[in-house]
Image (tube, rainbow, N blue to C red; front, side, top):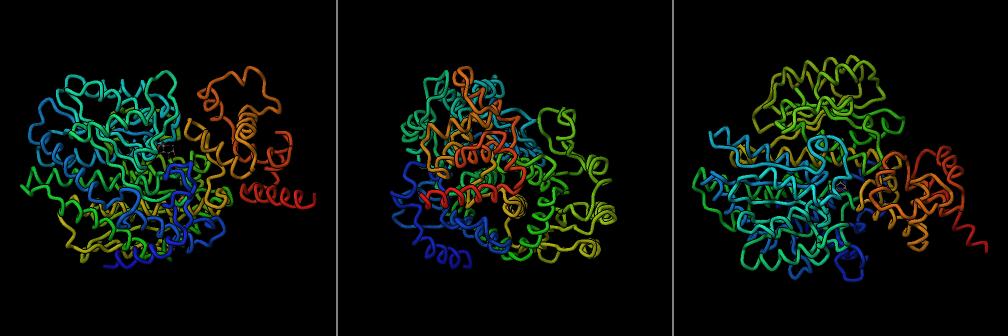
Length: 612
Ligand code: F1P
């Protein structure tokens, strides 16, 4: 009931700030809009930041009659989920020569891996063959580190799908792109459409179909939009499926790791859970069953955000660490830990963070996680993800200025948690914990761990939550929400967000490049061409664009941008002040808090234009 009451409250609030009206940011797809609820998130104290994030997340579950768009709980979405679940069940029943492939870029690819591993693990536990495979743009190294460029490559998308499904006679392909935008996924969907005898394509994303990206993809005759149009035709005959409810704009504009990631996890788990129950416990796949399961995720939001003050305390601690150039470490056990790794890796493209700002570590590292390629650990410190790596590389230099967050549940080896907590406590008192338990199950060592920590978010889940897979999923979503809140809030407190825009994003693929150019236009008020020029000058660190630079393609621009820090703030300062790149750089050095530097320039500009 609480979900309904809260949702009603949000409805009333958002009625006056209606992002759904036709004239609200009309040129943008919903996934790129700025959320009216978070306009002032950059000036809010931690507890208000958490409340704003809660209000944004609650938008996922809003039910509006006569709404312009499909929503998570809409009739059509539930029906499509049922149909896809039936396809999954068919493959479970007859796994020979069949495969389910989940694929995506960045967070979407990481969640493809997360969901695939969880489902396969459950199947193996039941002595059933694993029927699921994942693809992430950029390969396994993209699982725990930011690799944004491969997202632009449709050919590699199609080839990786061809390779993983070699020899299969029936493939259910589930492509995930929150913004209906990634060329990598468009290439895979197009490949499916060309081989309908084998592949049934499913697209998961969070924009209405007409807002799918329509920019030409170099070297291709299709766009994401044209692929979606074909899929819509096939969907009428159930030869393709589109699952694209709208969730409302992200709390930080374009940050699809947040609601987009959560909804991806919810939708796909609902599909797999229903198929699993139909195959192994003969529970029929029903419309009501699907809706009820989705609603149970709404309750996870309530349980999680009932600890607003606790989340805010961890956010503040992490914010203080980032402000003084120190870090936040997630130490975790089992599969909950994967969420820590995922959350940490997303901060680089979103906030221009260094990999050391937020790092995740999980028990035995990638050996425990069951990814395909086994050389993750060979890729240098950035991928040292086991506790042993933490003990060698991080613990010796840990101080009170760093924040450590333990993520565990009563089904983990709590002795191990206590051991590591003691070692961390010798170095820092700034240790916190997120602990999940079911009603009535407490671990003996939990009292000691609590005493070692400055704060503990203790989530107690009702025993009544259905079946084993279900409960684990709830803990996972809850952990994801907490981590997204902590890492986003900490970067806001560090000054990496202006209003609700990521002003220090990395410009490492075409989507991020366009987002950066748009942001410059919005903040400077200058025309598009001037903003793109400024962006290129910042990327190439020059005051005048040469013929050579002008003739380079977007891939070269985004490749070069990887090596430059604070590209967007630099371009903005140049646009607003007319400074040279060097002058703008020194201005940013004097004012290391990006938001303050940007605000100072914007204020100067207002004063200047006022005095004319
Ligand atoms: C994929 C993605 C995001 C990432 C960044 C760049 O987006 O890699 O996961 O956080 O914003 O894009 P999508 O294809 O799921 O929309």
